[in-house]
Amino acid sequence: MVIFVTSPITVASFVMPIAKAFMARGWSVDIVSAPGEGLDRTAEELGATAHALPLHRGVAPLAMLKAFISGTKLVRRMRPDLVLAATPVAGLLGVVAGRTAKTDAKILHLAWGLRSESLKPPFKQMVGRLETLTAALADMTLANSGSLSRAITSSTWRPLSVSVLGEGSSHGVDLGKFRFIPQRRNSQPVIGFVGRIRRDKGIIELLEAIELLDQRGLSFEAKLVGSLEEVDLASRIEATPRTSHTAFASDVPAVMADLDVLCLPTWREGFPNVVLEAGASGRPVVTTTATGAVDAVVEGDTGLLVQPRDPHALADALEQLLRSPELRATMGESGRRRVEEHFDQEVVCHRLVDFAEQLCGVESPR
Image (tube, rainbow, N blue to C red; front, side):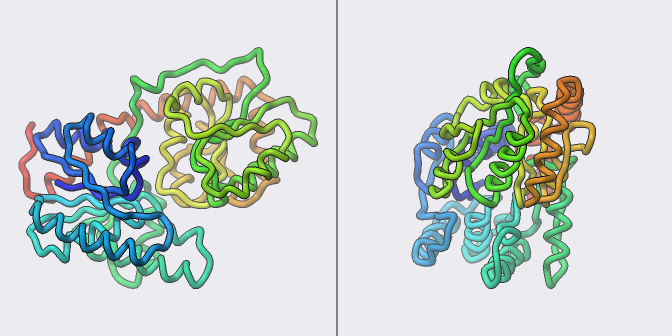
């Protein structure tokens, strides 16, 4: 099999457990992404073969054409039984390359979000058509949340085969790595954001909510952890009271242990795994009703939901948790139980392997 994703970071964080699950069943795995340390390191650790192509998250037509030609040649040469294509750019490339190569490979599109949801016209319509094309050309599309599945099928001009496995999630949570940590009751509470620092993650709304909470006289800190993908946000973060920023951290369990509330005020998602990681660590979550994010929290049980792009509603939800250590503890315990019941990484990944083997006509061991 060959797995197409855009970013080496995605290879290290998402692809690793999926590839391990397939290899445990006897599959040979090749991984395709943009070049980077994450690609090479993960491939070496897995014993898989890595292929670097000039893939970019942004619009880069020439690089995409080169990647398409190389990807098609790769699939034609490998003649795999299965092509897994995920993330917006690599999803399109992998599906089209798999079809163009004219092999007998089954093509499984892993939909982890809709890029078009956070774009403005005319790019929204253009990218939306490409997303529909990706799903239409695949033998099957797997969405990693129910709301994402509904968004894909409702926005297309033709019927598509879209499924969700279990309760969703791309690769679940390693419950041995993310351990339940009781809430800290005798220290100043910490609001945390963990992920890519960019506008469509709701960073501006989060900073505005932090300013509102500061004006209300609440005692707290705010920590933003992740790569700064829009550099003009640096000065905005520095100007926000009680707020600090650190670069991407590989030890996410340690980051979660230092937080009291995770906040993800995102505009769009597929199914945010960071919310599950927070739940596994016993941390309540404030996120939005955006596609994908709405599936990650049980409102009032594991966290709170607000409308996207509403800093006042976000501040109100955060204030509710900041003022109640008992509520934070109760929601954190519920979050851990939910992850244990539905999102254990081994179960999620092997469910994907079962589905793929059924698609390929492979008889799974019992």
